[in-house]
Length: 144
Image (tube, rainbow, N blue to C red; front, side, top):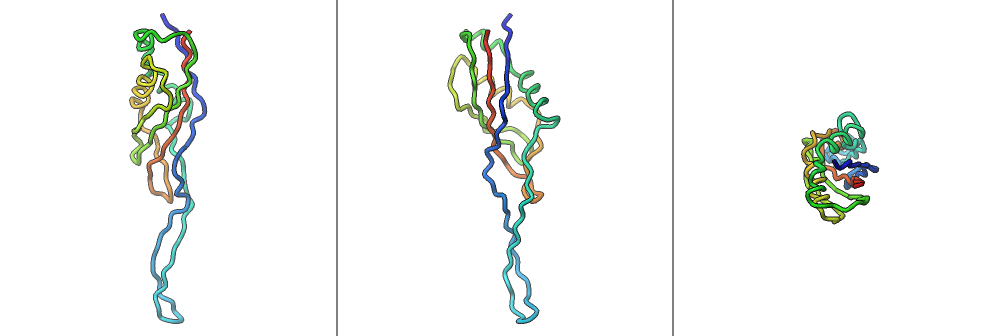
């Protein structure tokens, strides 16, 4: 039986920062009676997070990862650090999962499958409005 170790590294947020959301409007100037265009900038922003935190995220991906794929594909003994980017959508689902590494042996495909199978996240917000955000995760697999 293959004993497999999954090690998670820092989860990096790759969101394009629309840190200041502009809200435009028009008001009436009491002195002149003319309309004035105004712009209000909002900087209230929260990042996406997995319910229960990083520990629960690690458990979910590890639970979904099928180590038999590595046995079937005869992955050699070694340590594989797989870089993966993915999107947390406005409704909290995971999409656009893409590996940045290509070790083969079905490693990246299985990590993609395991991540996609995870429960929903709490999405990022900007000025109280939900938004899509990209994340990068490094997952290290140790094959003994």
